[in-house]
Amino acid sequence: MARLEANVRGSSFGYLIKEGFRNLRQNRAISVAAIGVLVACLLLVGASLLFSMNINSLVGYFESQNEIVIFLDDSVSGSRLTRLDDELRAVGNISSATFVSREEGLETWMKELGDDGTLLEWLVEDNPLQNSYRVVITDLSKMDETVDEIKAIRGVESVSASSEVAHAVTGLKQAVSLGSLAVIGILAAVSLCIVANTIRITVFNRRKEISIMKYVGATDTFIRLPFLSEGVLLGFLSATIAFFLLWGGYEALLYWLNDSALEWATLITGQLIPFKQVALRVYLCFLATGVAIGGVGSSFFVGKYLKV
Image 1: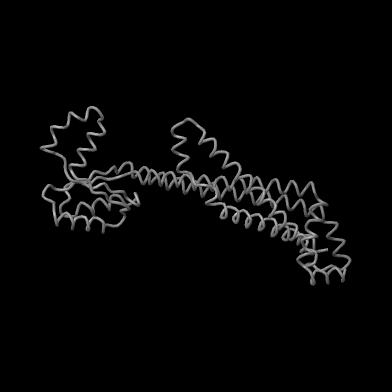
Image 2: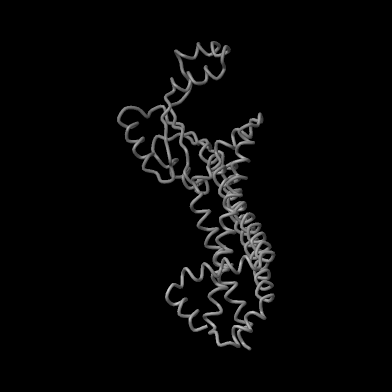
């Protein structure tokens, strides 16, 4: 036993890895069960996380498409138009502002009507449209304040803004964020309970081995370390398996959406987050969770059987 403890001190890392794999082999059935449970839990949490991120991406896309139109007074021109442009761009919460002259507005209107656009040719000489700006708001939750700020600029006659749509999008975004956090929190709690019980069974089945080691003089640290190594390896394997399964499932979903003839599916696919963009963060999250649950859980439950 003394020689074994010396080996632990001299080449602890190699010894612990070797012991961890040996313990996994000796308890194959329970190890496979623990890995399966942890993989399933990580997949559920990872899927919820990806769902939340993609919903926020989709909401952000629709948010960017929600423009407001600013109509200018007919008297605004020349230097005053330049100053108004500067004042408008100085307003916070505006991601882009595009000036549209009355001539451009009429031309766009005629193009939208197609062949019927020739019916508007008589308006070219006496154009009734106004110069305007098309503005994209950065944060729709602050739309009302932004609109009030724009209306206060001299030369702005009116502002056309879909406040109802902005409030709906903002509410959806907040609901998705809170709902996703709640789901992830619940799944994480359930995962901890299930995996903790699985690890508890693993340690319980080896209680005699722990008692024997204790009786022959092994220290508590010496007994704990192999279990800690086993738990860390179990968490590492679970995290790696769950990561590649999630990656494969996500890519399969994207392929199905791309191959679908449905128009909405094509629109959604264009706004979904590529897995490679978040792969490292997802894997590190899985790795930290798996190693923490496996390693700390194993070491913690061993303590109950060290008092002999």
